[in-house]
Length: 365
Image 1 (tube, rainbow, N blue to C red):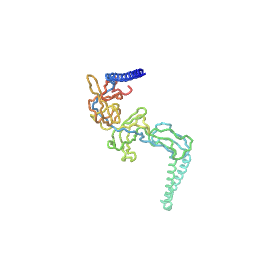
Image 2 (image 1 turned 60 degrees about the vertical axis):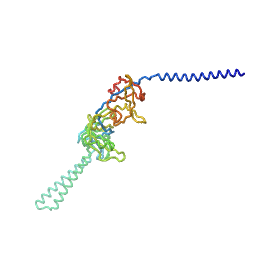
Image 3 (image 1 turned 90 degrees about the horizontal axis):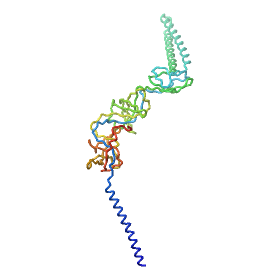
Image 4 (image 1 turned 90 degrees about the vertical axis):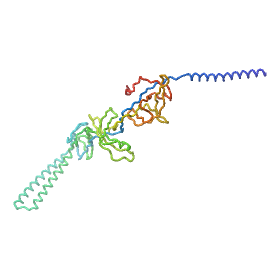
């Protein structure tokens, strides 16, 4: 009995020891394999930093406003007799746009002109009698007063008649008619909009910290979100106060509008050009990685032989312009940095530069 128990214990010990030895043997072999395994270089794109001419500017969101633009309204109520325009007509100042029924005013004008003629005749007779010495002076004064009253009545009726004929106040493009022939309209009814599209204003706002960079006459460029249309202009006005709620100041620029492609109320991207600066270190925005510890980029270093490695370098980013960003600290001219492929890199990793990518080509080419 004791002999069998001893043999069983011995067999269990041998089996357990074999398992433990195999585990340590396996772990050792894996460690030895991994220690001898060199990861392949990571393909990246790279560029050499060179001092560049920086074109700084102030970017803002603006709204297009016509140099002249009004909603045309009815001056005197009545029935619409005729409409002298169609949508998008180019009209000239003084052109008749709308005619309201004016038969009553024309009749009143004829009566007022007849009364004026009678008053003038009476005044002439009173003048003749007075010159002959047979007429009273107060009779002449009364006759002249009647003439003045009749003239005023004619002017009043003529004004009422003119208010029935609505004309364009300036040259421009007129919008969609909002009334119909035969419709009864009341004073104040808007019947169309008229916009001068030859010159446009752009209103935008800038933070109070950037007000010192603005001045009248400074060049601006604007572009639309639709159709990739752009045009140039100059700042014509800076609001002499800052909004206490938003801390923004309103700025107005006048821009050209070739072919009338800008429309009032349109959304625009505005860039105010500032004086250029030479010798600025700027890199593509894709070259900088942001983390909880700061902003950094990878700089290529020469390893053993022809091998390349990367070093993680923390940088201080500055202003942005398009796809480029200024670096004020951390990099110098001549440094060769990684521009893409950073997600697979770590400090000291081996890399190989992929020269098949043309960094100068626009995206999508």
